[in-house]
Image (cartoon, rainbow, N blue to C red; front, side):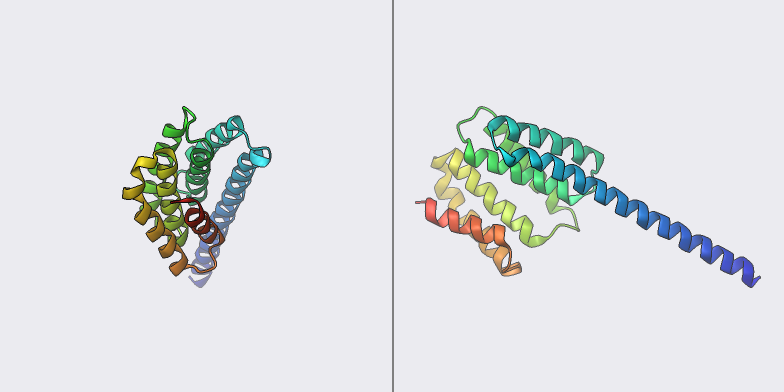
Length: 170
C-alpha cells in the first residue's frame, strides 16, 4: 500500500518537475524571441521599429498569457510614436500600445510600477502626436510616472521618462 502511494507521489512529483521544466523552457524560448525582436533596434529606423513590432506581435500570439511580449509591444510602439509622431503608422501604433496596456491591466503577473510607466508614456505619446491634447493628458502622464516611482523608486525607465517629460513638455 505504501509503495503504491509512494509510487504515485513520485509520479506526481516527476510530472510536476516536467511541467516546471517545460514552463521554464517556454519562458526561456519566449524571452529569446523577444530579445531577437528587440535586437533589430540596434540601428533604429522606421522600418526596424515596424518589423520589431510585427515580430513582437507574433511572439505575443505564441505566448498569449505572457506579460513580456505585451509590455515590449506597448513600449516599442510608444517609442515609435514619440520618435515619429507624423508618420502615417503612428496612429495605429498608438492604438496598438493602448490595447496592450489595457490587456496588461488585467494580468495579475504585471508589475504595477512598469504598468504605470507605460501609462505615463502613453499620455506622453498622445501629447507628442497631438499637442492640442496636452491640457487633458499632461497631468495624467505626470501622475502615472509619480505612481510608478512611488511603487518602485528604482524604476529607471520611469525616472528617465519622467525627467524627459518634464524637460520637454511646456
